Image (cartoon, rainbow, N blue to C red):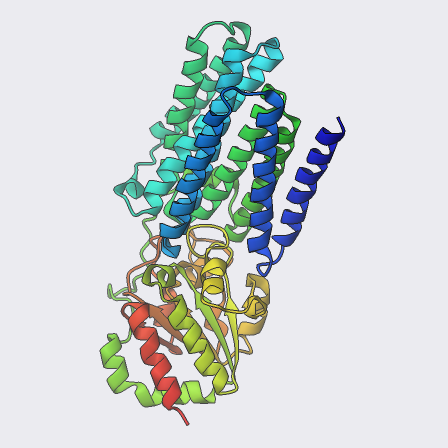
Length: 461
């Protein structure tokens, strides 16, 4: 009993310390490592006290999984991190489903036990299905255009109700194999449809919700397997995911049910002539014709706010952005970074990219603080950000981003926008900011256009 208590205290304290360390990006890596170590101790201790024979089998499985995770972590590029996180959420759901399935086949504790196990089985497979679709959509598949008609919504609702029906009926008829497979099947299809219907701009919310689902499924599986540690850690992940989902919904100014219902972006912000307004020329033309004006703006600016977006991730231009910030700071300019909560394809996506480029966390501004500073900022530089700075969110009704809090870059003295082209962002809403007189747009791959601006900054005396 003493050994069991010591191990439990170590594991719990390890998790709690890991959570504390992850409150700051400076310590997040060590927090992750400590959490992984605590999990390893928990798994080894579980194997020892259960007396599994042969012991070599789980050891081999753990070794293979560890090797696969290490290789995956080394090979995945930062641009692929959102789909990697979604995939890991799916694996978490699958693991919980497997635990619940094994518990159903080897244990029996009455109606309540069976109900809990079947619920964990269903939620785990739903998480797996939703996560797989999220991975495909984040990877740019045609599933991003999946139909979202009312008939599909009714089908999804029917599948969820059918899953609950199978769970309840299976609790009363636990020996019937049909009621183990039926809720798995309907829940898996429901997960696939749920994620497929959600708009691409809402992927950060989807990922955080699936993360919560994986935690809840693990907690339920822990109850079914009689493992209080799994129950507690799963509940912790579930609650954290729900809190993050709420934060993401608040940042998008929309309810969770509205997100799950999906939407179709069809708005076009063109003027009466069918043109996008006074959009500037290509990057090459700007370099030739607007160089003096742009250099004057940069030279006179004392404060600069850089706004990273998903386009920066696609172009893998975070290092180039860091070089630009260094060049501006060398001119004694104050440089900050404004990070929108849903910029990118997962919560904290921009923070991860900026950290990879060596940007100090103290230079990052959240949405509220950034919006307070924009009105007194001389220059705002947006890199691959479209939806999160689009004034249409505040001025156009019934478009996909209506009411969404944005970074109010338009209030800065001048705005320089680096985008691949003038096409709308992920929401499908064309950016009204391009029409502003104090905006310079530079089209092209940010990994190429940003260094061009940095070179011009270096030449300013």
